[in-house]
Length: 142
Image (cartoon, rainbow, N blue to C red):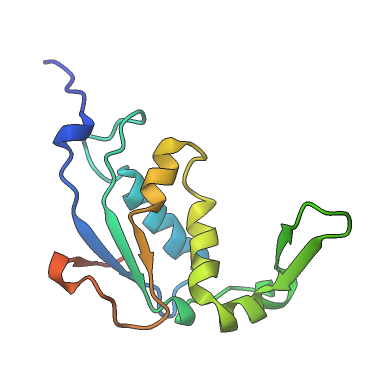
């Protein structure tokens, strides 16, 4: 029996929908990162981008467990002295829930060209409607 190695030209990409309503933000992001990377497929190879497309809906209804809403912060720095900005997650989830979900998914894919290519296949929507009905995505339960 021989081992088959996938090629980037032979990868068949499917579309999946993940509903984040009333589910923990991190668990939803971990499931999305697994699918974006292609680890759910039996033909997974770490050196080939063989992941699928993911649509995350209801990102505004995702929950943060414990005291993370008030204690967890998102930091960014402008590069200048004193340019550190911080935003609490309760404000981030109320104003930009898609960005909060994108940060969580981005932290779970590798920091390589394969990870950056995987993030281009991730679409996140705050509400229940999305613009990719023509791709016939299938609902993913976990």
